[in-house]
Amino acid sequence: MKIIVIGYGRVGSQFVRKLDTQSNQVVVIDRESRILERPDFPRNVRSFIGNAIDEDLLREAGAESADIVLTLTRDENTNLMIAQIARVVFKVPKVIAVVYDPERAASFHEAGIETMAIAVAGADLLSARIEGKVWTEAAGGEAWQPSVRPVTRVPLRPLEAQDGSFYVLVVGGGLVGFYLARALQKNGHEVTIIERDPETFELVSRQIDCPVLSGDGSTTAVLERAGASRANVLCAVTNHDQDNLIACQVGKYRFGIPKAVARVKNPKNEAVMRRLGVDSTVSSTAIITNVIECELPTTPTRHVASLPSCGVGIVEFRLGKLSPVLKKAARQVALPAGCSMVGVVRDGKVLTGFDDLVLQGGDTVLALVAPEQESGVRDILLG
Image 1 (cartoon, rainbow, N blue to C red):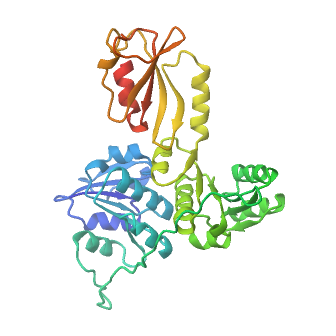
Image 2: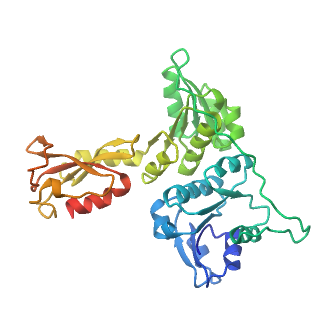
């Protein structure tokens, strides 16, 4: 089997040592280079340094051909986000995530993700799960069985304003959340801020005239205290993509909040977060990049528009002298599946009839492109 272990802490390291690394292909990913450089790290185990939330890192580690992915980091939301990427994007048959909140465990079982409380048995329990055995406690001799209450997702409520205003939950009381809440209040909306850091909570509580709750806005209990069952919109704007994703998912699936918006620090996570249920994503990095591209007319590639509802965007490709498609008929240029050419801009005019159109240097090709196919389209058109 090919097994990818995310997190080489106490449980992850014990588990890898228990595996037969001769019969199984084992890959370890951890953010700390010093952990993977320890002298006792198994020699026949491949290792990668980085944050496994990054889809490209998981792909490099071989997630597309993995049989099992285990997410064993200390952060519950990180484990759940990686597990969902492994399950949804890479179609990994068996995914196990460490969680601490049993309410969340029940929710994610619906998505085909197994969960376990790491305090139960650690590496021994993991080994038993993977081998399909019933694990028995050495001390008491009682068989361990997972206890997960079935959870039915709450239907999404219609997005309806009451007296012309919405009730908005803002998860994250930092600078972004603070100024967002002020702007929403100014426009007449009801706002509640949720902030987990005690110092930030105290500061925001003194500076804004709206309810501010202390706690983790990605948990069921805290969202329930904040009145999520009547909220119209949830905006998750913390500094961590994984916390924003899980807050949006819990808000939508457990409380029926009709609209979930997430701040995204890593632009590469935008597509996967929308695929995992977030309605809208906002990435300041992507916004600034697009502004720069629009201000530089010689840039060979520019993102013109994003169409989140169908998972594609409109991208401009300016053909240079070395473009491999020069002097080719536009209809003969084969783009990857899910992508298509929609027009060619030449001398200030948009040409849409491709039957007799031969591509020339200086042409700008407008194409519908899925994010994961952009590099392929760029290679075809620009070389």
